[in-house]
Image 1: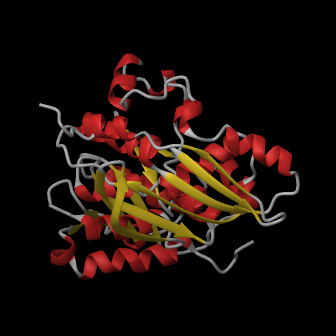
Image 2: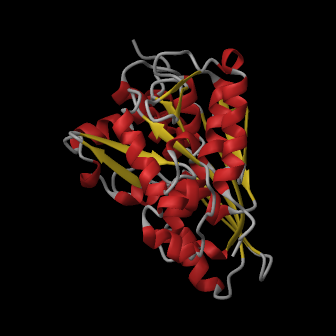
Length: 323
């Protein structure tokens, strides 16, 4: 399936845009001792919204597009990122999903992006969506406050079965403009992942798009992380076109999908996170979902719309009016 679509080859072209225009994008490229390329998009450099757009599309393996514009949320108007894809399972789960836990010494990095489709991390997702990339080049994306070590990059190249000089890793902290943009740009991936956990096969989703606000920048990592979660939980919208035979079953799945079905819903994520002793596994996983979902079934032409945005929670999270 999709034998001609290579997320790594598509993403490589996007990474080259960053490499060839470093001053414009506010990024900086360096090489590891083995010859791999590391692009800093916000650790020691400014990065920015343009870098965030390219980083988001890179995370999606070039199988989707990202665009920044303004959206209105109650009485707030905020920069927002809109993403769309004609390959939802591949772009979201086969590339963008942060599903690769890379351990090196005492440090653990969470990798996302198209390199996963060569290393098959985690394998069950690729079996489920029926996809494996074939490429002699790989692109990894890391959400990290520090640049990766040469040893970690070497591990990635080995797992992808490529030579290090054919690996590009793009890195941005959560508490950076590029980082905030690409995390908000995971809106469709979050929606598809939630639908999958509720029993909807990702292969039934034909097209998907969505948008979420890009939170205001805060240099505190924990606050930045919480704001990106709130952007999706309280301000994010996902639209999916599906092909599904059992419409009654589809309706039941969709009704359970929004973040509002969670027992933890309503409080700012920072409060939820701290009440859970900063342990993600103690948080109700029903919470990790878009605020609203719209699902169109092309088998029948019917459309289901569920959930609602929470403007007050967004305001509190994003620091409006707080001292």
